[in-house]
Picture 1 (cartoon, rainbow, N blue to C red):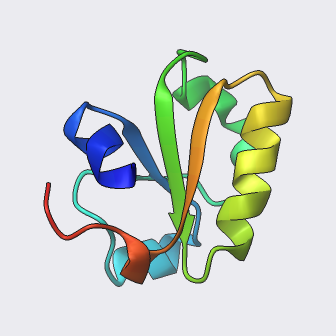
Picture 2 (cartoon, rainbow, N blue to C red):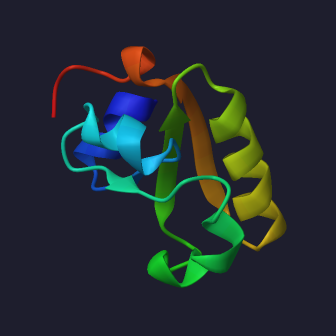
Length: 89
């Protein structure tokens, strides 16, 4: 389902730290570290958008998914870690 959402224009959010993001990230993803996510929800304007979150192992992205869901975002997938992301875009 992750690959399908990406093909259909989902927002991909890397919730790792800025330095982890700088070391490599999924093409087209935006970086909003999970620790600042509650303060940066304005970057994700449309609560009906499909959003895919990922981190290194899936733990931080699960926390991010919970934050987003609790904030009214309806379509959020925890894709796990960067290595779990599909190679095609």
